[in-house]
Amino acid sequence: MLSKVFKAYDVRALYPNPLNERIAWQIGHATAEYILGYATQHGAGTPMAKHIVVGRDMRKSSPALSTALIDGMRAYGANVIDVGLVDTPFVYFAINHLGTAGGVQVTASHNPANYNGFKVSKLAAKPVGADTGLNEIQRLAALVDPDTVASKGGTRESRDLWKPYREHLLRFLAPEVVNGGRPMKVVIDASNGMAGTMVPKVFQDPSARISGLSIVPINFDNSTGEFVHEPNPLVESNLAQVRAGVKEHKADFGVCFDGDADRCMVIDERGEPVGCDILLAALVKDALAGMPKGTAVVYDLRSSRSVAEAIREAGGTPVESRVGHVFMKAKLAEAKAPIGGELSGHFYFGDMFGTDSGARAFVAVLTALSHAKKPLSQLVAPFQRYVQSGEINFENADKEGAIASLKKAYPKAKVTELDGVSLDVGSWWCNVRLSNTEPLLRLNLEAKDKATVDKAVADVSAMLGKRVDH
Image 1 (cartoon, one colour):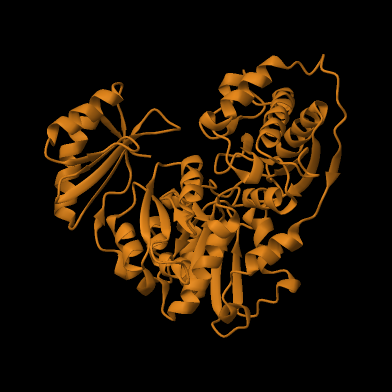
Image 2 (cartoon, helix red, strand yellow):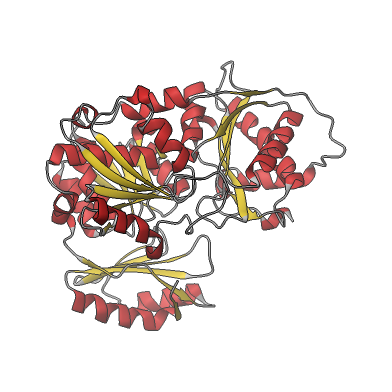
């Protein structure tokens, strides 16, 4: 049963079968063993070295799974700090703010309401994926029996950290927005997820004193654990409400968050979605302001070529990363980059301890707009230099063979294999990679004009298998 709930980046499955309270207890015990052991080995000689932060999202199963997880941790001897109902980036903040050995968020992110899971972080909120500790946690969990283990009596306490979290985030908000010098009206779709808790507590709390920000809320109610629409902003149909809201209220822009509010999609003042790579390009100038020349910016290798161009134009050094938050966070830390971004809507910030944060991305967009003194569509327009295919998925029983055929078909192309294969044939370029979460090949292709994109997609598709539209 355990093998069915562990994925490449986290624990995630249907509740209560295969993920249930017993398995949560086992995973809690194993996570405590791994996280505390890692902290001991890596010099965490602080009073909080035996403490672990635990937060949870709004799903119906989250309270029970959180309690079982915490009980397992305490049985191992960990002291648990329960931060309650919070967004996932809140847990990353709490780990660093308190100096704990690590933390876990109980969430299934953008999955339907009958799913749940655990996002695990170790010291300094470093991500725990399959190759960075999750496989070891799975091994340890399989060895422990809740019925026979004698508890070592770890403690549990609840803490409200919204005030320091709010203060930390608002440090990065432009004064013009705070004092009303550049008033902003924003439509926010919380997707019945944790943004419905986070946005009021951070941006609408009286102590925030943000006079220049007007928020039009959509789907803020997360009390039932159900969703009006799937909490996945990458699916275009899920953006219908926020797009309509921006037009109706004549807003400056809109934001749609995912279920645990670590990702977001931004909508311009015309109601049009802004590609996450194009948005990253537009945020680079602010992110590099005051930084030494050559400071790195990290982007996922599927991104438009205009991202690397924008980074160079702003005096930075573009650094490609594999797709996935584990790889992006590692690359951000290695390159000491102030910002990074993925097509999936994850934006990473050095001032958020190298982690992804939907709230911090929202602050970055507000600040960039206040500095630009122009509509969002005009801010991003200079970076819309190429035509993109969007991500196209293919089923193929021989994925490696398909990639080999693709390389053979373009012998003169410039080839890199950081994540799958990237080909640059001059008039167009593409990346084809194996999905980390589904049995699919994923194609992203770009050129200077639509005709070239259409022909190249047709040619490449013939080698990749059966196209899957979803």
